[in-house]
Length: 510
Image (tube, rainbow, N blue to C red):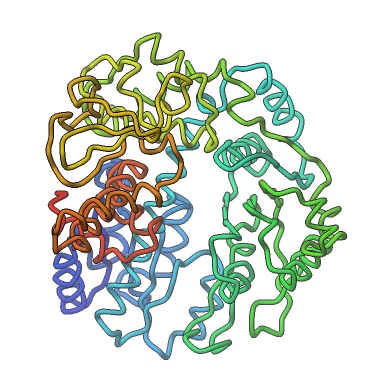
């Protein structure tokens, strides 16, 4: 991780922040004035540049506000936290419309300061992930005829400011298309701001979209700019728009109509010059009929509709995408890229991919980690893919008497069937393992069988055994999905950063 740059002429402030952040495993680099920062930026590389910048507002030899403006010109995506005395706060709020991530009033509570910096780091890392995906967009979109229509539509729409509605199943690449529309538009130099309206609690979504004034509600200690303000001059991508609460749809309609809105708790209208691109996997026409989505908002958003095909509709792209994702996974993990046999590719291309391109990418990460040899054979494919082939038998369980019993009660000896990678077919463990468990698609029934086998055997720590296995598998899968990024994995699982770190240690997953 890149260091956090701290700028303050007060040596004690620098010292306290450095020690607190180092205890959290966050590297730092300190400066005494803005001139030193600008000189360091001039020679910094992508590897040793700042992850975030924390700067005082008043320093000899330069102003934190001037530094903010200069840094934003060079690194528009860099989160900047401004430290300011309470007496400066009101004037600072009006001056920071150009983009401070947050304000840290002095004197500050150290744990809260560290938490704020941690939040800024996570935001920066999310942006880095988005930039990585943006760089991969051409390869990820594919070359199938079904995608050529998408390419042509992007070309036609990119030079327009018209509102676009992108439809398609989850994981089909809707955000990538939105980023491509932005990248090739006259707004390319402006910000691209994405928000998943389904991922934010209803009570927080209004503030997230439109911002809030200081004191608007409990905990609103400072003014905060919303996503519409952050996207001024650029593009705002509203993902899963069909899940937006009905009352917020009214406010969104007003913004789309005249470009004006009010922050939560505010009395002065704010104007934002924003191009809106929306996306959904839902049938919005049906949502309108059911009364869950405003008809006038639907027509306002649905000026131009762009449908993304599911991966199963463009199976010829699976070959190219698989090889591409295997290369990317190997590069991210620092290992030699694995090759995939034609038979494995052929079987992979027959899979239905309910999770679309995202699922294929995750499968390639899984194969990079789990496939035992450098060449991936058909038998090495993950259980859900093997289960989709007609010759795959129904779930088979290993009983305590070392006999494999099929669901139709036909007995098979362990030597007659190949065990999954990492398991021995001759094991006499009392715990049952499902061969190709995902084939059945009913993991709860599988869990019931395993639990019953353990209980019948007289084992007295069944809860602990199964809980550890469940948590281990869940965390490992999340880490594969996020390419080993613990913070992102914790966010996707809905647990805290400290929780996932503790669990990894307790479960021996280091």
